Length: 233
Image (cartoon, rainbow, N blue to C red; front, side):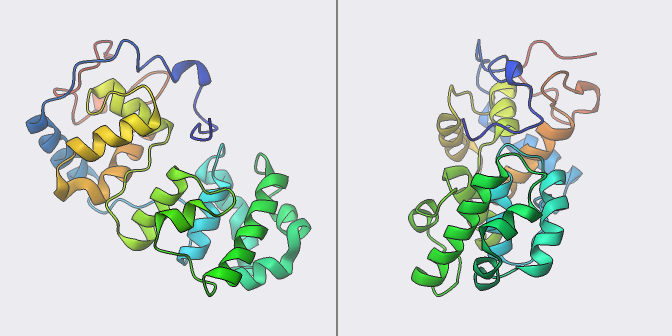
């Protein structure tokens, strides 16, 4: 599935979701985000970008790749092509040359080139603030659209990647068998005041604390609310 991250061990994906833990209490959800927000008051994506367009390209390139690897590639790419017009002029081969260190770079180069053409032809070279229009672009799925809507336009969307999928199931915040199910539960259960930043707080928590192979429970600020039974000492 497209929502897998390169650093995520495939054998651990289902481990945290079955059997599913009991759901966390809604009152505890509120306190969890109070604590997560205190640890990271201004959460932002770790992808480097300078505009909605460069954000869109970076997120498309991040599928099955690490943010560190994407940033390493896009620094050179965006130095020569940071608009749809410049990207189209660079050509598929030129794009591929800059992102050749990223997995699936040939397919991603074609997607970035074509989505740039569509933005010029259909959206006056602007990234649309519309889910349907975003998902109609090559290489853009629901997760990518959610990231762009949240980060570029401030929508309270929650993009479920492997980290959020794991945290949602493991903690009991939003148990679900699929990314869409976890997203639906998070949108239903996360208090409105926290929805704008929830995506970032949960990703950071999953990436650095609630890690796949061995969660760092000793450094977890929400451990007392977490439903995961196999906590580490």
